[in-house]
Length: 143
Length: 395
Image (cartoon, rainbow over all chains, first blue to last red; front, side, top):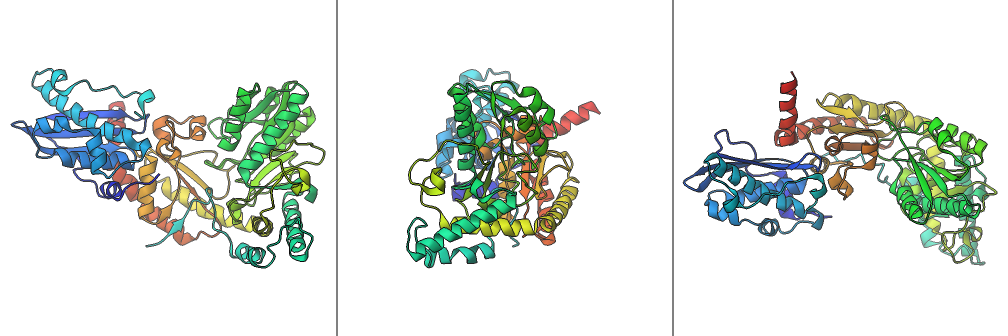
């Protein structure tokens, strides 16, 4: 198993690490048993993601996918962030080893979970907009 | 940047002595040991000399040593062979431990599918099998007990002599996978009542692709590999002459310096334990005393093993881990789970395995780079935040 140069760059010096104290959308996905947890913090103003930060517990590809996914949605309107697919994340990283594809799914799901939280805080049912966010149990460790 | 090789449990650098000894067997004495002309016979004599060297290191007779492609082949051969011998007498029960190498566990998996029953003994939280559990598990159906000499991940040394004595008194064959032990701790097949033993050259400065099976005289182990008449007709295939020569040189060298090396390596390892134990929310895996001199295994909560290894690699340190991501499976290492660790703790495991080539400066370097890496990974870990929150709630 070998990581692309891009993955190693984002792992060694990840972008957007940390928390946003006044975030208005926070999502967490994954579990400790599986060995990866991603937490996304969004600051949304006028439907634009003006800031995004993440915290991730997991392997190099989990950290790299978090880093690049946050880059990809920063400054974007919510509508664009909702279109982000795990495939796009994988492509942006110049590929991931097959066994690590689930990390890119986690990144997509973590962003959706944070957006769902944003809508929920405003009393809006997120499911019609964001879709269903899958529960991540141990059997689904490697999606 | 300093380069520190601390993954000797995975493989070791080939010693200069071995390199020098084997080159002539590739350039000059390249003959096939089965050939009658001189360069063939020179190779043949070298193979027989190495056989004696291996035998001497184990306190065995030369005709009880069979060269193999490595530890995995020796394990497969011993276990499958003993199972076949057992089945002939209607005995289809095998006893092993939960922390064996996959070469043993996967062979046993196959045998279970072929109708054998296997008892997997507990290793408790110290990672050591209790000899009395072996005794209790033996039935009239038992044809083999296979328990590793020392564990590859957590380094724990098993009560081989006691287990061997029990097996002998009950008339059950006893095999031990001693891949991690040979050359590092005292192995004596007579004193330790061992019937069959697997070893691998590259774990003690010989080359990869060479190993041996010790099989006590009188055990008519069926062949695993059929073909020519090499190894007295019991293991076919043209001998890996350079590998065999190197194995003989390396095992002799290791046994001559065994105590001195063990003392040196254990002192380095103990400094690592002492230094790394200062990191909060860490634990040592496996018995602190009954372990291989060079084995360090710890878990650091809130971090994941693969990330830890890659960051250590950035700092020039080669290490390994039992996290799911590094084991290539869904779960973290079966060994860490067998000693009762939770998945989330086992994911944060780090194994450093030292050899006598390591120095105090190597240890200094590891202890300098490790704590900031753990801190950095924890600072970006939501799991670490959860652990801290839970503690706050408790207090």
